[in-house]
Image (cartoon, rainbow, N blue to C red):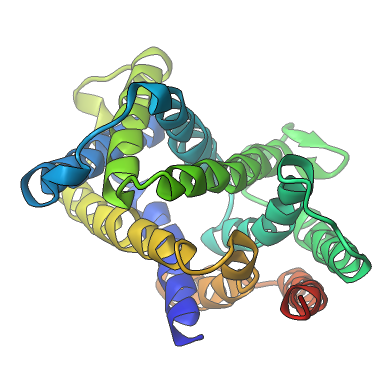
Length: 295
């Protein structure tokens, strides 16, 4: 259990570091630079130290491309864009819906039975997102709302769904014997390349892409180490030993740590809506996990 707590303490920290990094570079450029550098490091490590794992079968190329799409591009491009308008703690809380989305995808993709307690827990947890989604976000969101839910929140939910789906593909590649470093390295390198192309057309890549070079480099390297290297590979290591549902079922721990980090490091205001949502999600996960544990 300690390892799961540590996993989500690390995950929560990535939101805080990413929020700080946005002060020093344009968002899409930041994603591209970060992913290409992180992916390159992982592939070089695999090539020099695990050369027997440095391969991709022709029949599995499409699976690797799908990981790059759903695990990197459609997670980090929407995520970094929405993080400009949302607090790190709020983004973290929305991400805590991952286990419920993963369970729903398991039902759809793997034909797993969704028993009553799981279904009830999922409903409670997803309903718990409503209070936090209805709170006011950054003033720059004015005019970007649908039924009181802001467009950045909708975009972030797309990233959460994409990320949950991507782990099913990663799990499939792990079962085929591929190294997690190889999977993450390839997907980050390719996804980062697509992010830079997006940055070129949307933001324009020039000297203004970085606002302050040395803080940008320092925070980006820290983000790569904590998120891309430590978290991703730690998560994958746990995924080889436990089910996706089990690993994601402790996701409520991330917004708990996220509130702490956001308050102390970013001076973010934590409203009562946050606590109501957090309690509902914890209850939902508890009900949900009781069914998982009773198998």
